[in-house]
Image (cartoon, rainbow, N blue to C red):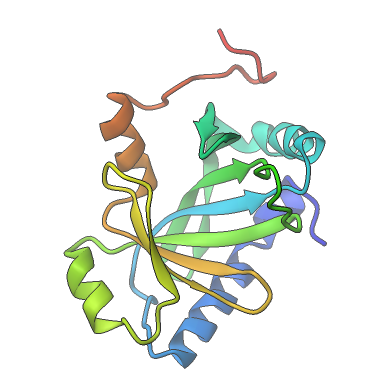
Length: 181
């Protein structure tokens, strides 16, 4: 398993490249889609706290809140990661939900469709595993592979979704030490 922080950030290109190759096997071409965000799952509440602390030194902005009954942290990387011609700048760190254990590590990459999600859903219906509706413009189509790695497809980048829902970015700032100001 890759450790959170610098080793995990260094592993982002390989993780995304692996997802892109497996999506291509399902006839979904995400190679030109902007990367909205990457999600690091944690196995326990303590692992969540450790991961947030390990990623924090690499972030220029950090926001923390609760989503779907568990804490999440969003971090905007000071130095976005290059993946081919694209850059990934936003990471999401999720604590596990009660009764839903996850292995620790990169769980999903979010891709921004930049267009009509219904057209994407219709064109790729046979290849998609489903669509999650979290309300207020957070409907993601997804493909989950046997190892649990997932590609999610959103109408807008996560940062824009958060800004629309919360009226600002970041939605709940925290300091470099993790304390709320």
